[in-house]
Amino acid sequence: MLTVAYLISFLVAMTILLFMITYGEGYSINQVLLAVVIVIGNGGYLAMSVSENLQQAILATQLTYTIGLFAAMLLFVNITEIYKVRLPGWLLCLMYAVQFGLYVCTSSIGRMGIWYTNVEYHKMGEIVYLEKEYGPLHTVYIVTIYLYFLLLILTSAGVIKGRRKISSQDATAIFFLEFITIAVYVAERLVGLRIDLFPFVINFCEILLLIPITKLNTYSLTSNNELVRNRLENEGYIFFDRKLRFMGGNQKAFEFFPELSEWDLEKKIPGSGGRFNTYLRQPLYKFIENEEENISTGSFTMKDTKMSYRIGFIKNRSGVNQGYIIELDAGRISE
Image (cartoon, rainbow, N blue to C red):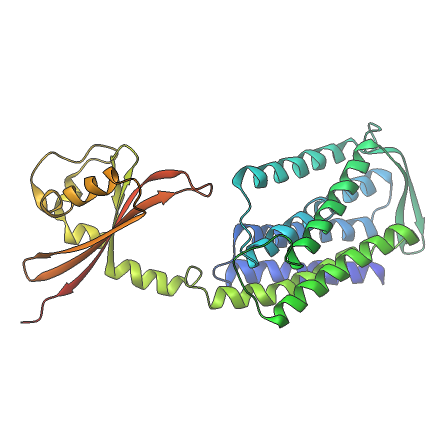
């Protein structure tokens, strides 16, 4: 019966992942990673329930640690995305590096004493469990879990402030999933249950988390791919790097300025000739010279078409300038 329960939990997790990949639009990499981690972890619990010896149980346990090591961190990252709390790129990289480093250390189980100093295989009826004594790095793992639990609470409480306002229903759902996750984890550690309830709880919390995520994606311009595609088809975009080398453009930009098709990628703008040099070269240079401006707008008339342009920076996640973008929108002049 317990194996059947773990199988159902695994199938639920797999269904969620397949839905996000196949039908869901706008899900971030961290949201998909959470689903992947939960699938792998649930597979580990299922494998653990049917293991027949210590080696099989150790391999299954290593899989279950994908949930233990990454789920709390990814819950925190996903909730910061919902609340629009900006995490610096270096911090995200550090968080992933620490958790991956700890996960690699789980490969020492049964070989070295850094994760478990001692481990024994036991089976009582349907219940399979490992009796273990924890090593120093397992203590570090526990500390990271409680750290992310604390960060989850601080984010939802508004101590770590973001820019997005969410509905009271969504805020309640997020608080409830945090409470359930933390309560079950702490209770299991205190009581010392032989049956691990966490895979069932994390599945439930993932479903609960998908409610505000799906809602925000549905009513978000950046996540609505159809609107973005329509805009890309009707507006032109031209890209340059920080050294003003041509880095490409979309089809509409090539229609507006046919000479772009003759330009070499990652080369400087040709010195003369063409519509671009006539209408956009000087506005682009002027924008670059005036470093205090974040955006420059203007318009010009090209034959029977009035063209509006918008020049801005291309910045990475850390806000560092990577180059320049020119956005073009054309409107035909009425006769």
